[in-house]
Image (cartoon, rainbow, N blue to C red; front, side, top):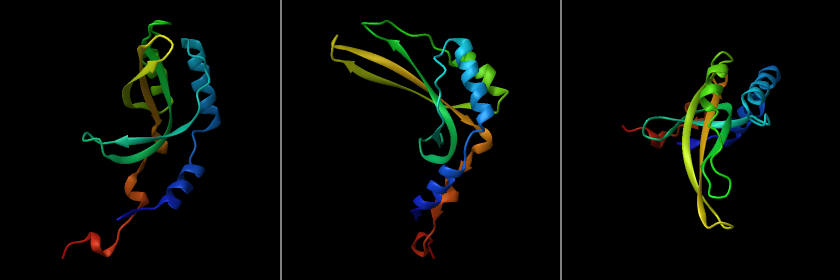
Length: 137
C-alpha cells in the first residue's frame, strides 16, 4: 500500500473553498472580533483512534488560553461555529499546544480549532495505491 502523492497534490490544487464563501468567512470573523485574515488550508480528518481517514479544505483559528505577558485572548470558536454551520462548515479538530515564551520564561498555551468545508471532504482511500502484497491469500 502506497500513498499517491501526485494524485493528492492534484486534489489539493484543484479543490478550493469558493471565493464568495471565504469572503463571508472573513466578514464573519471580523464581526465577531477576529482579525479576519483567515486563509484556506488542507485539513486532515482523523478517526477516533487518531488515524487519518480523509482530507478537506478548511481553516484554523487559534487563540491563546494562557500568557504571562499578554493574558488570554477570547475564544471565538463558539460564536464562529454558529455562523459557519450555515455555510457548510463544521468543527473537525481541536487541539492545544504549549510553547515557551523565552522573554518571560512562561509557557504560553494556545488552542486551535480547525473548521472544514464539508463539500470538499474526501476519503483517504482515494489516494491509496493498493499492491498485490497488501492482500492475503
